[in-house]
Image 1 (cartoon, rainbow over the protein chains, first blue to last red):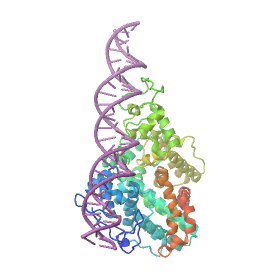
Image 2 (tube, protein in one colour):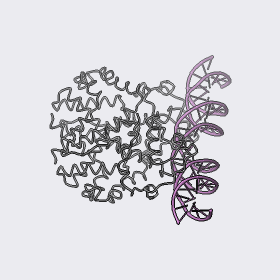
Image 3 (tube, each protein chain N blue to C red):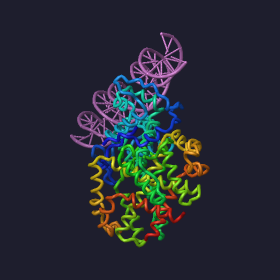
Image 4 (cartoon, chains in turn brown, cyan, blue, purple):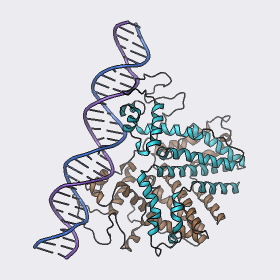
Length: 248
Length: 248
DNA sequence: GAATTACGTCAATGGTGTTGACATAAGATT
DNA sequence: AATCTTATGTCAACACCATTGACGTAATTC
């Protein structure tokens, strides 16, 4: 499961004005002194390695020491590229956004376009559930996030919303997508045996609840396992978009 | 970085038959040897103190050392009552869930009732964001959640939905509430300086983006800070409930 | 070829959760 | 009342963690 090509690669080529953590222009070549073990560091290499590390070992494996070991460099070398681990986390989150946007182009139908954007973000998050669990709530202030905001707001403006409403409803939309994606991701990130135990408990525990104490649950009992097993994501997406379409 | 393993909460029990980490019934009196500073420890005392500590000093204050200092005991004394800090967090989460539903009674208006349920869950989570950020990740399928499911499904049934739809839309509703609450909570659980930096970014970073590259962002620029700063929770709640009311 | 400096390395600081040994007082047993 | 058990508070220690500052050294520049 390698994601060799980064989602933002195409975008990063065409601009010479990207600025790194110390406001130095990155367009110029950096001194790439090889580490003791021979690897050559860069922001991309570090982010890629971090994503793979998290995907393989879990979110708690994202420490400068372990990352340094995985990179084959001294842990503190990472601080030459990222101010702090939080800064690194934002870069990882932006990487994730970039990956979900690869190949996405909004169409003329703004509802359908937003719907696809939502589904894409969710798919991207589920592809890296453990990364998503820790990155979903952050504002990355990075290029790929700018792109996503730009596209979303443009769609709502094209729908006819006022600038104020376009921002407001973009926020409502994107937070809903991110929140559900994060919830699903954190669930997917659980250990398999825990997850299946949770699934079974919906069938088992809820089916054994006394009907006298829980009459409503008793009434819908037959549908619980079926409806609770899947994901409500698409339902929610449609519910929100449906209301938005009526409010325009 | 936080360790987020342990899916087993089988040891969390309801009041009567609560069992501690060495499977001893708590109902009987324990040896309550006073600490050096005179305070007498118990699970409840520790949980109460931890909740107050989080509320007063912020999210990062919940460390065994600080909690020990607040309790007036050696930090490691806490391990006599809780296997780990994660175990302690689950105990706090249990306390929190109970708190959320206290005094809630569904009324005749099912939309208004669901709305209040949603707001209550969110308020409860935001009151203790760090706990919520962890608790919402793993859905706790226990007594208080049964109560919430029963009330929610009953409301949707009373609205006229079929049993299958009542379950389906309850899931969509409650997941939306939980997901947004968790998102807000994990954001609120960030370090204060990180959070305010995220907030400022909407004014600062996004306002300086070139209008040629980001025309839509340029158009809505004046509204960004205002609309992105607050929470979209109530908007989303209303959007979802609005669609539900139309589908009944 | 010399000068500059970016960046990889190392050592050190002060935080964290957690464990095991130990002492002692609370409660049980007599 | 005396004795025994053992629960539990304390202490020291361990293994981590993020982050900082000093220091060479090699890569780029001039």
